[in-house]
Image 1 (cartoon, rainbow, N blue to C red):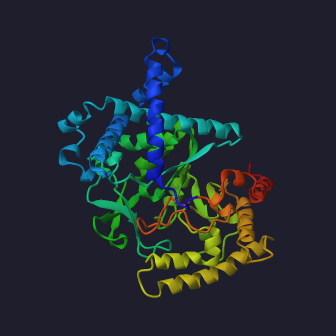
Image 2: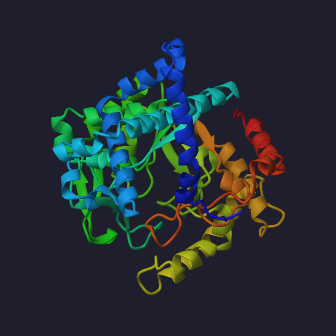
Length: 446
């Protein structure tokens, strides 16, 4: 009944059960009659395909769990004993000498996760989803996670990436993830990037690349400084974008580039030429060089994904009422006097503009204070766009108020922990979903 997911508590409940499952699996395979069982072959093949990357990942997890047992905490690798921070240090091998059972178990968990992803992809296709799963590639890894520990040469140390001040966050953003060193990446002929793409395109018909501007530049922030204190570092666009196009073709996976925020001149046009889909968010699609009015559905580009809002924005219910402004003020995200008032003035001007768009399209809500009616009208408009894809967020259809994520926050807000307010069974019978499905079908969207 708790409103937030407690990931640590869930892990404590699940791990003992998963360990029992693994032990049973090992006993099963130890029986000579099952030596060539299909599941055993699948498990061994998975480990072989995973190679060094998988081996390093499970070694990292094994060390983390071992240290947790001895210290009671789960520190990032930068806080480990010095001799364990280097994967090549003989001390690591000594620590893991007696950990074969744990290594096997961790490989088993990775295998089970991969199988579940495969089953989900098959279920999606069998349910009639032509594209199937739509996956998301983050802008970077956790600073203290397995990826950075495993390949420290590839990581630029002493910096993290983020974004300069913008309308989503007035004091800039520090995402706490380190960038790759572009010189090391180029020296390795971009193989790590190709491998990353291939892995994330598995079981997917579409991949969204978060902050696609990283293909040409990233905003680097020195350690200990704020988001507004960084600067841009160039990346080799043609090489990186070409690899994306190649892996997209190899894996039969379309690519959506999240091109919001400060987009360099010419980038959208070049990515369009390479076949990327643009990412168009209704609230941001306006005639910025003219009267500021919201764009009509026929003004959206065809080679794009269109959506009303995103997981980085307030829900429609909170946006329409302006509750997100007070929330951001309470979190200290307006660093200068008057910023909140400016945001409130902008929002007050946006609502009439949205209503004017809906009125022009014959979608005016009977009650403009009813966020459910506003949500349905906005999605009807987005369904009518020229864009190849139109997507919806379950949060908005269910009328959720609290955001699932607030960019630029970490400890200030419980990002990615807020649960849906309804159970799966309740959602299945919610008439709003049936209405939206009909709206999409009527607009020619399967």
